[in-house]
Length: 120
Picture 1: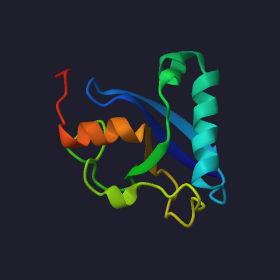
Picture 2: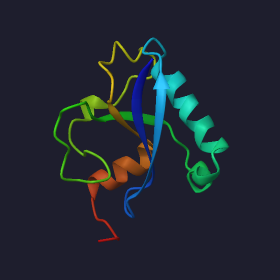
Picture 3: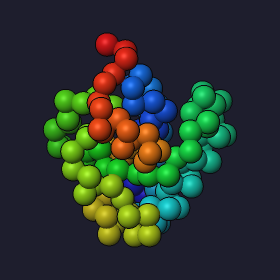
Picture 4: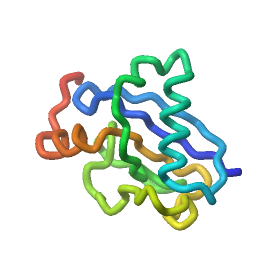
């Protein structure tokens, strides 16, 4: 089992993010991880406001020992790090202590085209 952190993003504009720390088997697919995260969000009391988002995308935020981006909510570059949900986590290069972002792709594209934040 490997420990990963999934950053559930409710709002890019308001930087509304909560972390899920999960123990996962790297043989599961991205789709299975996405479903696991959505189920965890729906069943965890502190995550209830996040259950309103239609999560459909996972993206590698940072791997262990890499430097984080200057954008606090998500790395806007490196769209090649958006996960192919049909591949296993090990095929995607996910390893111990990798941080992933979980979000709605439509909201991400909108924020990417105009990355304004309302909470400074």
